[in-house]
Image (cartoon, rainbow, N blue to C red; front, side, top):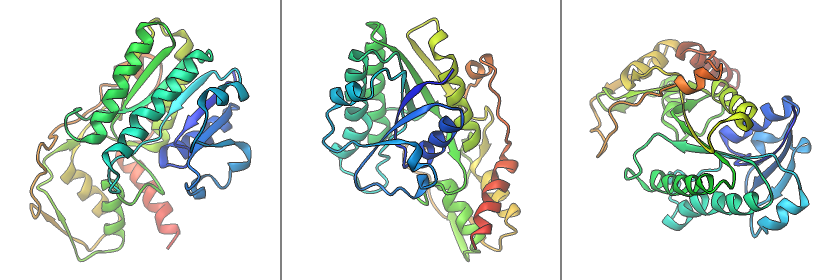
Length: 294
C-alpha cells in the first residue's frame, strides 16, 4: 500500500538513501530541506520529490497544503561536529521535530518515525537534545495523538557518507595510503550496519506501523553484532591493501568513552527483518564505489 510521507533530512546521507527507497517503493515523498542545503545527494531524484524549504515554514499550512500525510519520518540531525551552537543543535534535534509532532498530530498524521541514538543522554549535546525529543514523543503517544516509533541507530556507514564520520575517515585514509593513522587502542566495541540494511529496516517499520498494538514503540537498529574498533580498522586496512601505518594507542580514549555498543535486534527480527550485508560485504561495496571515483 503506497503512502504519503513527510521526510526530514533528505539532503543528508541517511535521508537521501531513504528518499530513493521510498520512491522506488511507490510512496509519495514531501521532503523538508534548508534553503542553503546542497542537493548533490538527491540530484537524480529531485524532480520526483515535493521539496519544501523549512526556513520560516508555517507548519500548520504545510499539512493543509499537503493534506492526508500518512507518516512523518524524521532523519534531520545536528551532531555538533561542525561547530554548531547549543541553540542550533537544539533547534534541529528537538524544536523542528516537535513542531512536526504538534502540527502533524493536529492534522491527523497517524505515525511519527524518529531517528534516535544509542548514546547516553548526558554524553553530549547531540544525545541530550535527541533524548528531549524522545520524551515529547512519549507524551504524544501516551495521550493518543499518534503512534511514535523510536529507532535507536547503531553506527551506519556506506558510500558517499560524511567525511567527518569515523568509518569514512578510516576508509579514506587507508585508501589514500596516509603515512600514519593515529588511533586509540581500539578496544571499544561497536555495531556497524550498512546503509542499505538500515534503510530496509525503516521500510519494514513503515509497512508495519499501523498494526502496532501500542502507541509508543522502540527498536534498536544495527547488525546485532559488535566488533572492536581495532578489528574494524584492521579489516578496512586489509581490504584496501593499505600501506598506512596503524598507530594503535597513539591517542587516549575520550572522556566517558562507550566501551561496548550492540543492537538488540529481536524486535526487528520479530517483524521479519534481517540484515543482508556482513561487515566485509558492506565495506567492499564502499571501497569499490570510492575506488571507482579515483
